[in-house]
Amino acid sequence: MKARVTVTLKTGILDPQGKAIEGALKSLGVDGVASVRQGKVFDIELAGADKSKAEAALKEAADKLLANTVIENYAIEMKG
Image (cartoon, rainbow, N blue to C red; front, side, top):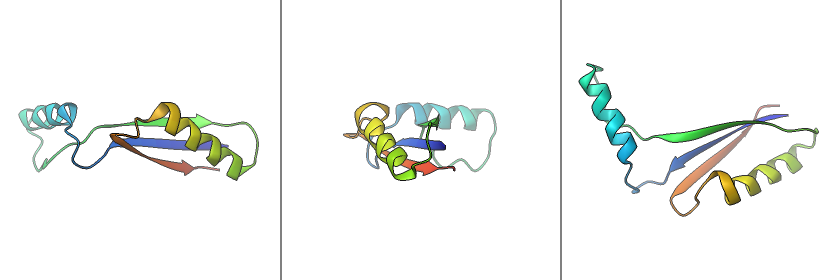
């Protein structure tokens, strides 16, 4: 079973890396960039076929390791 965990900064949290990317894109001539927020993506393959157990395990992993839940949100997408 495969899953994707996407971690992003919560709204209102400053994102200096996103601002640096935004500035670099503009300096490269990429038009229409209003703002950039950076994040992390984890593609995880799990053994077993129990979707609810897999989601629970991924939620625990995100809460304990993958995301700093004080400043970050995460979304879990099961892929099959």
